[in-house]
Length: 211
Image 1 (cartoon, rainbow, N blue to C red):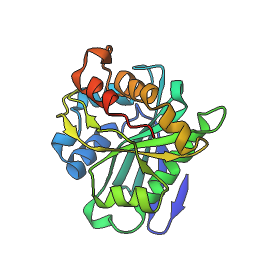
Image 2: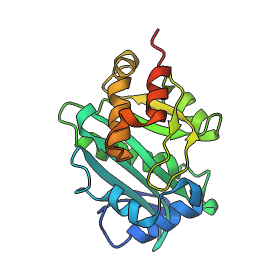
Image 3: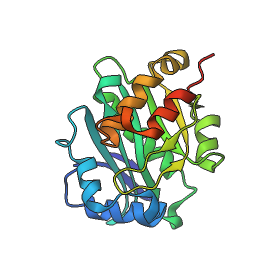
């Protein structure tokens, strides 16, 4: 548990009682079009849905009120992490809460890696404040490809920037393994069993630019 002024950050059980509140917070802060429905969300956070994934949730509280949450997964096959959802209630924004939750989540993801977490991925809107934060403050870079979030699990297809933040792996190592990483994201995160039959997956793979 990490404590800070006026709020508290907690790692919670991904099948715990607060799951409904976390989903509601994501819908409120991200918007219903950006969050899968509750049944699909339960599958995403269940440790039994996909053995190659280890889901982690951190929550932020002000007293008994849930004010923020972040969901990420450890990708066993590629030794990386991915932030799937994050939200902070409007009244609590611009206080560093997102950064605190992210730091806590990255710590928990790193615990799962026997050799050191290689990288962390995030899907972000191009040019958004969060996109700039990743690039300017957290050492991230845009993966050299034309990425789209696939239409899966009730989510709409939409173009996004796929940002990678190096940890134990360097930028060149991450780019070299992009095709393997992408396949893992489509199969394990989005549960698309045969990505080679998905047009978006094929287009993204064809767009990878390796200098």
